[in-house]
Image (tube, rainbow over all chains, first blue to last red; front, top):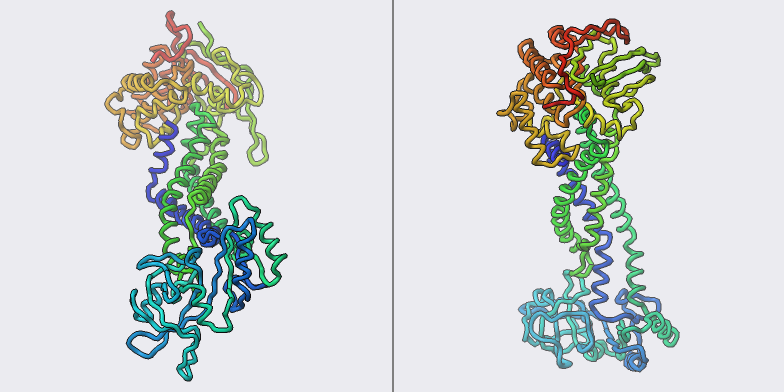
Length: 397
Length: 242
């Protein structure tokens, strides 16, 4: 009966209740988006690095992967010595360099990014059409490269590692055959990219890249102490910095701290808005029914029931708002993700807003708790009102 | 005759704007089973305050109030709430029905609070609405009822848990003469059927209908007149027979 009364009370002023639920839904959507933003980028990055299946990244001392054109020499010997270590099960050398391709049908040149790698151990792309690299004169490219160069899978194409536009001269040119289209997981959305076997990429660069690599990815044995392996590598090979997945995530975490702070502040504001909305509506509702509540107390309805009824109203408003807010939040997150994904230099598959069910449930649970708390003050007020005086004042009013 | 209510030297003082107001000044009153007592007096004489004290809505500053053997002046909040639920029935001047509930649901409300099983309370609500002449209006909401009908539903609600005493504060105060007369007739029928009633009223017709009239002035009883003595076969406990 008490719950029926609570529901009937909310339905008594349908428009007001609907507006409040809409307000709570907006607050819930914003809260959800901020929670998704707060953890989305980190989790997205974690997905990338874990998808590659390597626990360590070796780069020229003092650099981060691909943040400069620095390379490490003696790559073959270094890779062999790493492979010989007991806790290491795989080593994938990578060389990143430029790629210039004459466009089909005219004399313009398309610039892009070339990745030299070992197709057997790479984790940087996924072939979506055609096939993977099988010979030194083959090329796997992404859709942007195909679109920009006007080429197709199966085409034989002249590409170069260097280009001097003033004299229209190519350096390190090779004739390669396009054998597949791939999605490069770590590359920015608009980037034109291609991959060739490492030896091909090194040869195209001539002396500057001979036996050199930009990054060495290292997979450790399951159960191995990654930090110990990292420390041993850095101690034995002073030319390289070894970055573990955990350290990379920490590094990204530090870089993203502003985003997280912003998300935290906006999420707190959303919670406060939700709290105030529910609190205001329930307080107004209690004030309107103060005479009814006094009568309920007078005819013997217990304080606990009154508290339950009023807090129940807050709970229903919060639950309805949170439910609607979940849908609204997912829609706005998808829309905002589309806008932010166009940010220059970001991997195409990078998510700013990542839906984590447990985090979303925690956030919306927090909002519901807020709604419950918002009903606490008016509930306490309703339950403790002086019955006789309230009835007298109501009669006079 | 069984004593249902016994008030002894009851006082109620409270401050208004820093000045103490002595609303009730040492009232003593006995009400026996089957009586219908009308408390009359000018506005502000303390009669409604007295009724609130008798019904454990308010607490006296001094004195004792015993109803059906319990000193209601010393009950804690939870006990007082329970006492109001089952020990007394209240009828208010402004009816105060829950606007979102039907007439039957309003009558069921105190029974639901008292954890009466659904089937039983639905049956009793229909029975009580039939008794007050509203059998056909059980599913109507308060706004669909006239003032007199609303007050009759309120009386049915007050009787729901078979209280020892029915307390009515100006039950005809909001009604026109004709519907007021109908409510008085209903109270009279209830009393004749055995319900003990205490009413506070300005209404001369209501006061004339009561068996006994207690005059209050400045918070004290100034006159106590028995107009119609109890019949020899008065009920033993005065609890609502309906």
